[in-house]
Length: 475
Image (cartoon, rainbow, N blue to C red; front, side, top):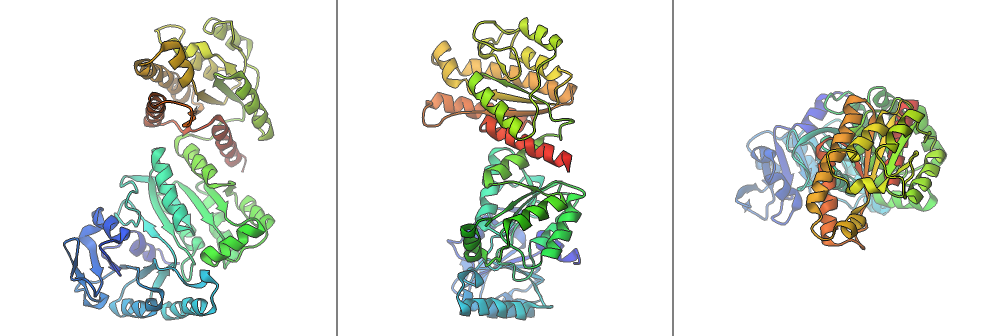
């Protein structure tokens, strides 16, 4: 497919919202972005919206239109498509739902009608979709999406998955190159966008959510092309009988057996994750970390029990938690108090979290563990909020700020000097901790993120994300 069509999609020089409304989040979102000077509003019921002129029809707009967002009732979509064709619009994104995903014969026929109308005359995204978000051009239907550019591409049949991805990823400091929700895929589908992003120099990593496909061969070729140059993190929605039924009613997607999809992802080198949280965490890991040179990790924690559990998890995932060599053990004995600690891997060394002096502090401990020659990845786990509050009393924030500086010092050494992969987990139970704990937790996460470390909400999340990094190395 010619790439020029994607220029009209992601970098349009003019955009029309057909069916614009003062209460339409899409309209409000567009007016807040840099594309507002290229934006035209269409609705015969309004002469202006939010102080901007509103045209009765797309045909009344004096300038050419590259990209149209259609938000009229389903029955009016065919006539609107006809007007867009007469106007010379290159691409129409149909926000409107109520087509084949309903399963109603008349609505299925309505979708077929717009496909027939559009064939060879205009390209379609949707119907039943959120459309495109591209921070470089300013095109977005998600008002709260970050305006800063990044390197993550997202392709999803589901609009809510697309929107949620932008929200959750924003909390982890992630930024995007291009994002598209394509819904029922009456024309352009996931394989078309995947093929484009595979060659897009601004996209270094692709997240893919797919419920089904109408052309498995095309999807396979697009996956093979993409995975040759960049990681593709994939979720297949609807792997159970109930899930397949839900997918059919969501985007009219016809699914097939779970084994076929697993085989497709494995053969093409795509990394299949199990759920949405794993996708966000895995994208976070790939965005901030390089792939480890091996599968041996060191875990620094403050709970012997949880670290034992996670060691078992590592074993199940094919991750090694080796013994530290004698030289590392000898160095740790000089830094870590004997009572109540375990100088092994995982390292259970809770007293070091309240030492913020210049010597024998957490930074020194991290450096020693990360320097061990048989270690490829360091996973640092922190959940000492209640403990530090009990030991130090109220007003623990200055201690936490100094502690965060020491942790960053140690982690930066391991990453930048030892050239090893570093992942961070910050645990907080929101139902048990007080407001100061929540503030300190947020401060720590922001601090670690600002220094370029991937931050996870649990040790389990970090370990699972690491397993996907290693899976990419294996493939």
